[in-house]
Amino acid sequence: MSKPAKRYLILAEGKSADPHYGKTARGVLRYSAHPTVAILDSVRAGETQDGIPVVGTVNDALCFNPTTALVGVATQGGRFPPAWRELLRSCVAKGLDVENGLHEFLSDDPELADLAARHGSELRDLRKPPAGLNVPTGENLELDAQVVLTVGSDCAIGKMTVSLELDREARERGLRSVFVPTGQTGIAIAGWGISVDAVVSDFLAGAAERLVVEGAARGDLLWVEGQGALLHPAYSGVTLGLIHGSAPHAYVLCHQAGATEIEGFLGHAIPPLSELVELHERASLTARPARVACVALNTRGLAEDEAQAAVAEAEADTGLPADDPVRFGAGRLLEAVLESVDLRTGTLQAER
Image 1 (cartoon, rainbow, N blue to C red):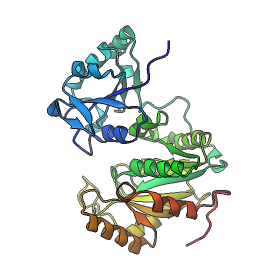
Image 2: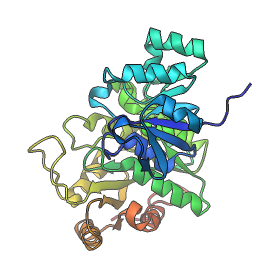
Image 3: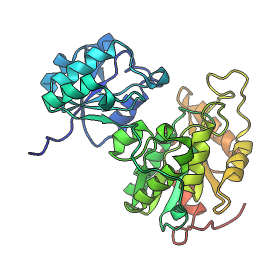
Image 4: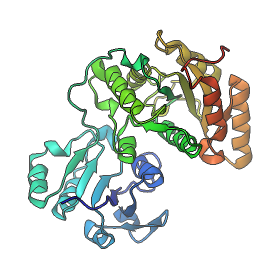
């Protein structure tokens, strides 16, 4: 007997209003094809978010008929706070499947695994790498599909969002476009992918290659979700592995408007966007030099005129098209990407 269509209860205890630590919840709410019927956050119980009721307990959510509880928060170190254990038990005991994007795998927990078996629940650890990963084979250079990778000046500035907005715009224009998920939120949204930050470093580029190979079986224009940042003192390795493993034809450079320093790392300055363009182009796989096609700005928190000024400044600094695809639409950025890559051959149309 097949399971009913997926209906999410998003677990966002204490974080549903937080745009950083609640980003999984927000991403799924905005982009998932599966409906969210309730959000669990006892701090905001009785409120609504995007028209969806916020409840205080799992029991309170059952009247909305969820099938799957999704861990919608990011925590320090990717571990569950102690208070979450009872919350997870409650979900499983009510027969809900659980999708978990943290580094702590629920399927490896004997107590929760036994409870799930008894109640017919499935524990899905979105960050658990698949078996058989290895180094790249070179297949990434032989695909017919065109690959675009989002890169950024920092972490958590919207690389996934930009990829999804560009994919949506491309599909609306009738292109065989595919969002390629590389993190737990993207996997929850798309229903497939590999969370590359949980892959052994030697096999990270191989995992990225596997993703673009699978993406090429799904469509012709691949938007690979970026992770980390080449500038980041902690997370630069995942970015370089994605660059070399996905072997993109073009980049979209993402930046938080007004940011001058890596968040949480005092003294680690963000250089001008023009220098970031050069940095990423020089870091490309030598067998496939890629160009930055455009700049995607995150102008959240800026007034309308300030956002427009930030876009104009980015264009002046880089000589490239720039825009905020969430605020102003993804059309101009998509046009820039399509113009930078010959979709018939995958070769760059013009050198700058």
